[in-house]
Length: 413
Image 1 (cartoon, rainbow, N blue to C red):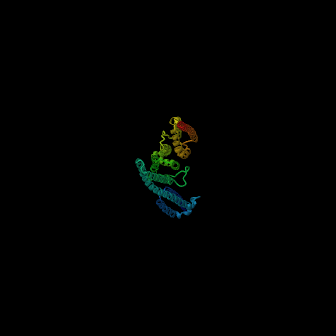
Image 2: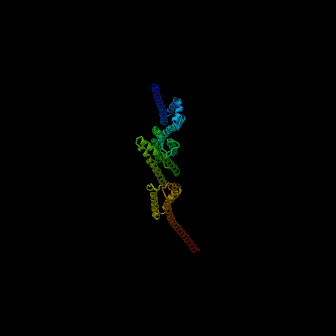
Image 3: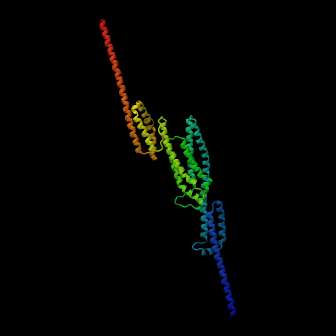
């Protein structure tokens, strides 16, 4: 009896030991499954190419086959998840990452294509700027060719700017906004694309060429308004993406000076537009041999024009009829024909000049007109008086002559 009990105890211990061993093996199997599932999930998120994802797809299939025979055990141990749900999670994440990488790959392809076009336009624009400078140095002997070249350069710069804007817009995911956080993978893709396609260099080159274009041409308000809109749209695009690019460069521990300089480059572009407006207005006066001091803002422009009119009014009587000629050239040929109807609206719209300043100059011009008109009538009266005196003298002379003839006739008779 005692021997039977001993055997029973031994068997119980063996059964208990085996149960513990099997339980430990089941526990380890479940832990291995969970760990492997997490590793595959992480590798999907870290993948940077379709090739890597294809390899992970094979890993998922192998992983699924490896643990399929333990499905019942895993379903019980993984609650509230189960074997199928965790496998589905991997497959869904794989599909999602394929879409993201595919989108990024397409964007990179588009950006690379844009870069090739931009490189071509950069070269073309440099040649056109050189041609314009050469034509200007030849005293503009071929005006038509100069105008065609300027127009071609303007269109070429515009096309290049639009391509760069497309490139900037293509760097970021379609749903990106300032309030969203980019993943480390997305930042890496953006950084690589910026470096590979020289986006920062091309952007600075674009702004520089626009400034050079303004420096070598004299434009009308319509052209300058189009350039102003282009500059505004471009700068708005940059302000949307620039801060994030600076952040990405900072993370990469690269100098962000080049990117930060773009803000000041846009400011220089704006200054060049304003300068071109004032320079073009002054050139209108120079074309009619009206020499004015240089002006670069509304206040200077108002003061210089006002001073010129004051001098003309002060000298009107002294220079006589020339005063009316000066008035006609200034007001009729320049101010009323081009400056006021064409340029003043542009200046006011862009906050470079005010309506109150315009009203002040209009009052000055009206006063000038009254002075010139008065001076002209004085000379007219003088001329009329001289004519009358001459006519009277002629009549007197003729009358005297007639009397003398009559007297001589009487004496003969």
